[in-house]
Image 1: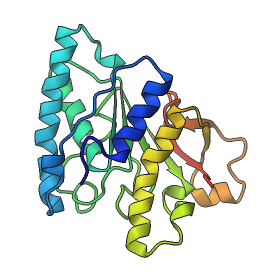
Image 2 (image 1 turned 60 degrees about the horizontal axis):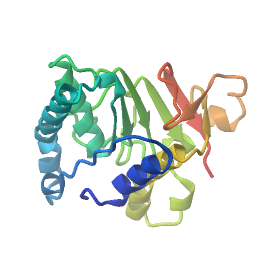
Image 3 (image 1 turned 90 degrees about the horizontal axis):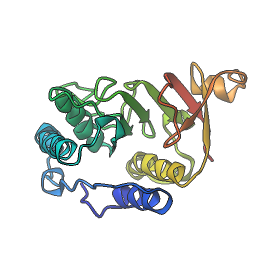
Length: 228
């Protein structure tokens, strides 16, 4: 329900351009994402994904760009759009190096499952950040590595809003967290069985991983972190 100038894209774009010598492409699919009927937008994800596939396939040829140097980042339905684009690109022998899915939209992709979305087959490395787990975003792990800040739900500064506003706020936290990592914030997460185990101190000594931009492409499994 946003466009190319939305805070989600601009925060991340501005963060990258302030610290790195990179090219950033923002995909504006507002015409398809702004339908009042969510299921129509979800249905359109594949069509948008194919256009992105065409674009990336073209620049890999024209600019001699290796797919391993591409990092695609998508929030909510955008995570599924890019996940599908990554799979379509594989059919053209282009494998995207990394896709970050930020709180991938749950409805009609995980429950009930009508459409195919992002998963670990979408790119060489897929990392997922869950912030409205089981509400608006995916409940279960779907990437090579999945991060669950505050257990994936109940982000602290959203506590005091009404239920619907809180869910929307939590859903938006993922791209804010990610932009902060691009700017250098270090969110160290612990590999653990659950967030409850982390809160009880039963994850100390376990493997750690940095959530967000600095995440190692060798990371696997579920990681939990408390963000205040």
